[in-house]
Length: 391
Picture: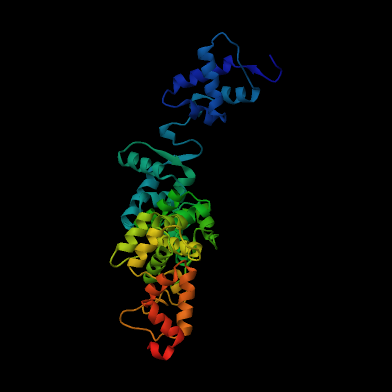
């Protein structure tokens, strides 16, 4: 046997005696009260049961801790949870008075104010109400008695010590969502290194109880966020649903399918279809950010789908170059170079040259461009050669 080890047999025999005296206590509770890792004690008992002839050793420090533990030292229901305890009845009567004086307070709130777990306070209240003897830690009893019946507890007093007020976190969260498109609560949580379900649960609890807080570490991570990375993008307040629909139609006119547009904006084509076909469409931050991202990526290059071009042409959808960034979101504006049946523009050589130039840059032939402009070949020739006769 090594000099720094001692035989485990007397220790195992003593632990078995303690288990026999207190069968209601788990082995982990005995180990915890002796200051020993529960896995160590369970391993000793398991080895002794499965290999009774094998000699097992243990460190002298662990042996001393377990051998010095007596059955009377173990925690029991009548004495609370060990340490300096006191009769729970006066404190529980005081808690009952607090609850009667302040109906808006919960048992959990009072427990947190006294530094107790809500389950401990609930069990003590139940035992005292049933007339059973009950003891609680003296420090907790003193804190409960210090809460005066005519004092309304503040939110800071009834929250757990490891939590902070949630309202500033919510305000910061909403401010980020106002500044950024595609800034969902889940995306903000992941960016801050927080489990999205943790943040969602805190927000849900706050709607049910405005006095509930949030874990301090979680709240500080959210508050530390000043900027959001892609795919969140700074929100442009001038963006309108009309402008989003025009961008979607223009990309189709350039030869991009809804599937292509959705892939560029990281959104489903089904969502884009629903937005484009709804009589009075309403956009979400996610949809708005997706269409804007696809516009930035695809608007300056022709798409691969002739079918998308033909469909857009049949519906007279204007291509991207027909719109200016300053006017595309204004419902009162019209695309440049697209014939308005209620208003025939006064054609002149310079204007016609300009319109033909950007339409042919999109890949349209001259005949297709003239058709888009509502002009025949003869009239276009007259405009270019005899402006006075063209009108």
